Image (cartoon, rainbow, N blue to C red; front, side, top):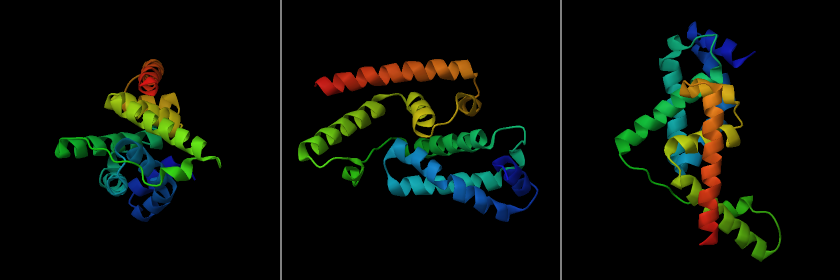
Length: 179
């Protein structure tokens, strides 16, 4: 059963069906938030809020709209609402980053850790929209058409923004790497 079909059933009052969507999408949503804020607890809370809003606004779901696009539009709104309330962005280091570093050589581990740190700083130097675009297209592997629906623009606009964003990210990374 497609996500859209499940959401249609939720919309029709079968709210227990939301658990299927939760099981399928909780981890990608959590990652979406975590890549943005680096706070595990906050990411869990925001993920939960997305599902609460999906239930609350289930009547706004239209079957001709891609479910993931609709869900990530809600996720963006949840994130924006949170940061408006908090009125400042704070980032935290990733605990256990070493788990993602491969290789036996201590030197390679340190080098990879430093590169990760530079990438993290470079991502945080981007404006929030560019950072979101890169996360959705490169980390969440969403199609440009889906991202275009989330942002309410054409696919071509998204392609241009992602291209420019990646170019800007590379420039910032190179500057940080040289320092």
